[in-house]
Structure formats: C-alpha cells, structure tokens
Length: 242
Length: 220
Image: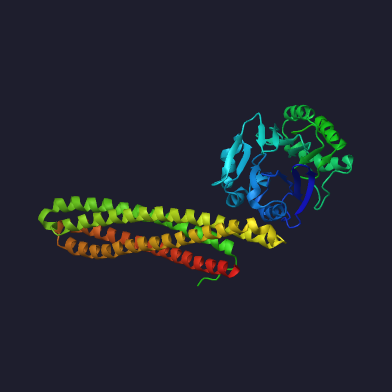
C-alpha cells in the first residue's frame, strides 16, 4: 500500500491507498493517519479486505501502542468493516463516529474499543497537542456523516465529498481539474442525495482555510483546486437517481 | 481424520454442523412432549381398567418420567449447542484476525518495526487457544448429553416391551394399551434416528476441528 506524507509539521498527516494487493472488485480507498507525539488517529481505516495491508503500512510510521483513536465518518463497509479486527489489535482505543450509527456499526464487532458517539452538530477530537474540528456533512452521502478539519495543517478530510472513481494506481493529487471532472461527476450526482445539504456544506466549508481537501476515494485537491472543486460541486445537481 | 483443503470453509462447516444439532433436536423435543401426553392418556386408561391393568400403572409413570428427562436433556443440548455455536463464531473471527495479523508480520520489512506488535499477535494466539479449549470441552459435554438421551431410549425400548406384555393381560383394554406401546415404540425409533444424526454431525465437527487445528499448527 502506498503511503504519502501530506503534512509534516509538529504533527504529521499520512495518506494510505492505491493498494496493489487489493481484491479487484473492491473500490480503492484512501485511509489517513494523523500522528502527534502522544497520540495517533486513523481516519476511515477501511474495509476488512485491506486490513493487513493497512496495518502493515501504518506500522512503518507508528507502533501499534501509539494508535489511540479511530474515526469513522459514517457506517459504510469501505469505511469501517475492519472494526472487528482493529478491536482485537487496539483494545484500548476510542472510535469517534456519528451517534446515529452506533447500533449499526457495532455489528462489525466491537467488544473492546470505546465508541465515542458524535453529536449532530459536531465538536472536536482532542489529540492532546492538536484539536481537530468535526464538520457536519450529513446527507453527503450518509445521513449521519462528518468531515475532519485540521486548522494547523489546513487539511479538510472530506470523506466521500470530492471522491472519484479512478483507474488503479492513479496519482495522489489532482493535476488537471477539468480532466478530473468526469471521474467524479457520477459519484456525486448518484451518491449524494440532497442539493440543500450540499449547498449548506459548501457555504460552511468556504469559510475554512483549506490547503488540501482530502477525500476517501480518488485524488486529493491542493491549493486552487480546492476552490475549483467547491465551485463545481455547488453548481452540480445531485440526487439524480429518481 | 478428515482432510480439509480450505481451513476457513472448514471452520464454517463446523459452525453449521453444531448449529444444525439444535435444529435437529427441536423435532426430538416435539416427540418427547407427545410421549409425555401419551403417558398421561395411558394413565387414564389404566385407571379405568383398574385391576385388569394393575401392572400397567407404574409403567405409565415411568414413561412420563423418561419423557420429562428426555425433554430436560434436549433443552440442555439446545443451550449447549447454541453456546458452542457462539464460541465457534468467535473462533472464526479470532482466527481471521490471527491470519491477518500474521500476514502483517510477513509484510513488514524491518523486524524492529514489529516490536510493539509482537505482544498483540501473542495475545490473539492465546485467545484462540483458549477458545479452542472451550470449544473442545463443550463438544465433549454435548456428546455426553446425547449419550444420556441414548440411554433414555434404551430404557424406553425395554419399557415398550413391558407395555406390550401388560397390555396383553388387560382384556377389553388390551387394544387401547397396545396403542400406547406402539406409539412409544415408534417415538423411540424416531428419536433414536434424530440422535444418531446429531451424533454423526457432532463426530464430523470433532474430526473437522482436529484437522483445522492440525493445519493451523502446521502453518505456525
């Protein structure tokens, strides 16, 4: 699994993805690690099928006892179906995830890890020296859904927003926004159900200082491409599957 | 010993075999209840027959007691089979975790990176061993409970013969009491058939389990 450091300051952000050993019919996912001197958080740690590759890749950056927190933006299997395995590896960790999905996510197997239910209006995840802001992104696409914003690194982990369906081994960053549009158009039109929710999110996110917009599938957006994406998304008609 | 190609599929087969035992025994429970009701009817006939069916009366009590004991055994087996099924599910999940963790060990290039992970893998190995031991212990108990039902059925076969002898002496009540003996005999045969099926599934699960354990040991 490819690991790319996207921020290296007092704390680090690493994105993992483009796993060449991933079974063919499984959608490629980006998993993120945020590491501070005392704590490590994994964002959307992924499905059961990529668990071994993911853990092996993570261990090249932090030891297993440094991983203290997990975050699941929503309940989908590509986000958190590996939970039953993490539960055996990290018995003392915390899982931060929407309150709405607690009784559903527990079906993946949660005997040891503590579930921290996130209220609808968000809040923060405190990693000691770093406080991460939870941005509500409900109905984009899941009805209980959060993004994670790091104001120090200026990175917004946007979950399925900004996601694209790419060929295997695609680069980690968008290099030509116009060429990227066809790869993400259907994803947003079909998986995002609400124009109202979309526009509300765009208005809130425009106020954040974002250098990197980091989705859970496909390439990341950097610099001016972040604004390009917000403009494009605002103008897009979603929820077209009816 | 059973030979297995795919340990993961074999684990699923063990789980199914054990779970099916509970389903199979629900039929035994139904029949045991019928025996109990039959024993009560027989008691009523014997009471009407008075001295003509004197030898039959204690037999009806015995049939009723045996049916109750069988019901109790079936309930215990049902509970135990469910417990084993749960342990088996946990074992499958833990074994999956163990497989994936050993896969992590194979993937990491520098042994120094694994220092913090070694204990986690050892914990999972220990947990799997514990579940394995629990599974074997409970499987032995299940086998013992099935053996108890078999003993009940052997006794019931003897009782049905006595029933027939006593019925033949009951003059005009002969026919009614012979029906009791016939029904008991048929019910015993059906229960024996179900218990045999359960024992065969249990044996299959035990053999598969031994083969899986051997395969796991071989892969360590």
